[in-house]
Image (cartoon, rainbow, N blue to C red):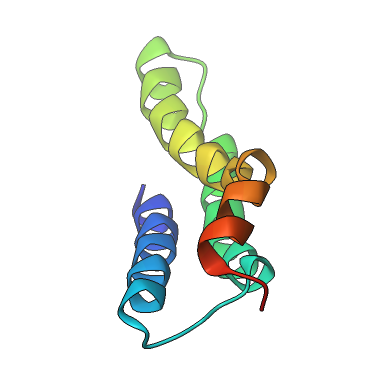
Length: 87
């Protein structure tokens, strides 16, 4: 969950910096910036899955948070380009 939090924080802080005019990232830059911790977090969540139901629930929450972050650029590519502009 720590890596998912880092990834989501980087995504939202990058969008905030763009909104305030401090930094103008491209959609590809945002994708890579958020995807690295998300991919590591998803891999870690898969590795920590145990056979018990409680472990599946705990690892499932972390897996969902990381995979949802990985899917943001895929599902919202047009919206990110619209918000960030043609850089």
